[in-house]
Every structure is written in C-alpha cells, then in structure tokens.
Amino acid sequence: MSEISVTEVKTDKELKNFIRFPMELYKNSKNYVPPLINDEKNIWNPKENPALSYSEAKQFLAYKEGNIVGRIAVMINHKEEKELGISKVRFGWLDFIDDFEVSKALIDVAINFAKEKNIGKIEGPMGFTNLDKAGMLTMGFDKLATMIGLYNFEYYPQHIEKLGLVKEKEWVEFEMDFPTVLPERVEKFSSLIAQKYKLKVIDFKNKKEILPLVEPMFKLLDQTYNSLSTYTPISDEQIKTYREKYFPFIDKNYVICVEDENHQLVSFAITMPSYSRALQKSKGKLLPFGWWHFLQAGKKNDRANFYLIGIHPEYQRRGVTAIIFKEIFLRFNRMGIKFAETNPELEENKSVQVLWQDYNPVNHKRRRTYSMEIS
Image 1 (spheres, helix red, strand yellow):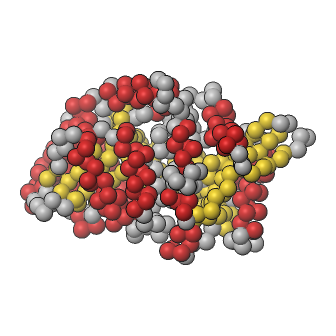
Image 2 (tube, helix red, strand yellow):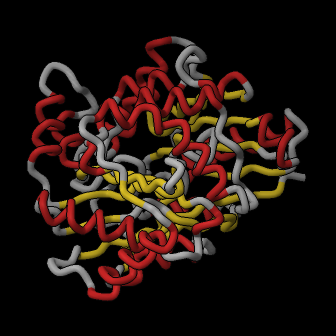
Image 3 (cartoon, helix red, strand yellow):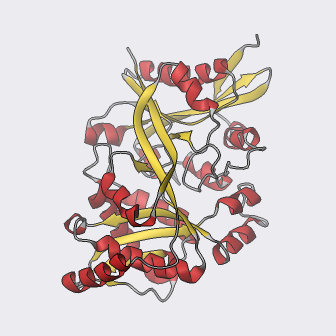
C-alpha cells in the first residue's frame, strides 16, 4: 500500500495546485461547475478577503506516489468565537479521490489542528463565513451544480461518515418550473399588500442605480437571518468584497427591491441567469474567451437561480413576498425563464421555504456539514 503524505501549502505553485485539483478530479463530470480561478486565489489573499483579518487559515495537499490526490483547508473564525461563543475548527475546500486512506489523512489534519489549538470540535465543509459555500452534497449528485453551491461525488459522505463524523446542519434546495400564468391569488394579494402598506417596486433605469442599495441590502440580510443561531453579522469589509465579486454578474432585470413610502428598503431579491454552463465552458477563466460565455448566458437563458432574499422582520408575515414574486414572474416571463432553482436553505428555515409554496417546488438537492467532538 502506497503511503499518503500531507503537506501544508506554502508556495504560489502549491496554491495553484490546490485551486486546480478539483478541476482535474471532476474533469469527466457533467455536473461539476468550476469556480473562477482568480476568485479562488483572492480567497487566500488578505488584501482581498477581509475574513482573513479575523481568522486563521491553512491549506494542505495530499500526495500518493507523487501525485496530488486530495486537499483540505482548516480555519478558525475568531469573530464567530468572540461574538457567538462558538469555538470550532472549520474545514473546507475538501476534495479527494475515492481512497479511504486519503480522506482519513485529510480529516486527521483538521483533528490535529483542533488539538493543537485546544479546540474541541471540527465542522465542515464550510468557508470562513455564512456567505461562503458550505455543505457536502448528500442528494442530487445527478444535478448540475450552481455557481454558489459545492459539488462532490457520491462517495464523499460515505467516507466522512465512515470516519465517525456526524450530521451537524442540513440544507435543502428546490427547483421549480416557473408558471406561464401568474396565480390569481398572488396577483390579487400583491396589489392589496402594496396598497395597504404603501409599498412599491423600485424601477432601476440602469445597473449603477443599484449600487447605493448594496449596503442596505446586506444590512437587511442581517435583520432577516440574525435569529438563526449560527448567523454572524456581515462586516463592512465583507460587503465591499461581495459587491466587487458579484456585482459584475448582476443584471438590473434580475434585482427586485421594494421600498416603503419613506424610500426605505423593506425587501429585496437577487436572482441571476444560470451561469453554470458558462463556467463549465470557460474552465474557470474569464480571459481570453470566458467572458463571451457569460455574456451569452446573460442574454439567452431559460434557467435562473435565486441567490439572496431579504425581508425586514416587520414585514415578514405581511405578505410582502407576493409583491416580490409577482415582479419576478413578470420579468422571468419577459426574459424566457422557464426553470428556477433556489440557493441552499437551512432545513429548519421554514419561513424561507414557504416562499416557494405556490410554485410546486421539488426538493432536488440536500447537503450537510459534518462535525466531530475532539477529546
């Protein structure tokens, strides 16, 4: 049996190998969607990723017979520890060949790092914060991945469970055929709610008009989800980073914002055309020709993804979502969108899942983080 060696990533070349390993691992998979390579590089650059200012992080590569066979990153979010009192080692960027000795060697890295730091728990796969990709796929291996969702082979959770890790959190995702006719109940209810609370949809003339609302959107996200036990507030630095990372992909027609009579944002939804096929064709690069695939995906696409939805707590049970969905329906219909897919939602977050109830949603993917107590 060949020996498995695991070494910490120290050089630019090793970081490049760390980033590119899953692209090689999944090169024959029709459902894997590669990230943009430059974005992956920026994750590990303190000048580009504000989470590194309050986190520790290390990356590792596993080798067998001189070949890279796996990778893992380990992180400690000290902000989470300070503000929520949660002490754990997060692990992520976990990929490995179908070899139990490899997966064991990688998880041992997280266990040993936790012991070194006197921390009693590991959990993953996850990133630094709530807005990073998280959750190992446990259902939906035959479905195309999205730009914000992790993809993995079916043997991944089998290895992790064999190693003694247990379910920590579970996310569900839904897909739906978007209707060609707006349900009458939604039509009537949206008009009634808009009149009752003096709400209106903001009409953006161009994408630049969205910029002043980016910060209010993230603040509204804090208000929407801060009741969840695992939610960590988003810092101003993170808002800036996510704005720069995702704003280039946003089309004003896919952003719906609802304001009150005082022009205060009370709800928003950010959707995007599906860029999964564009990412596959571009192989993780915008240059020299990757941008063309993104441009085409934005112009002609029958599939869209929901990314972020925020609703002010005062309006969460007042039917404001009917206004949002009426507007989404009108726009999707105009742009030829026939299928929609949600982002991952915590299994217990029923208040978000109820948003899709009028559209016959099908739970087509599940994912979870796994944890282990370290003695």
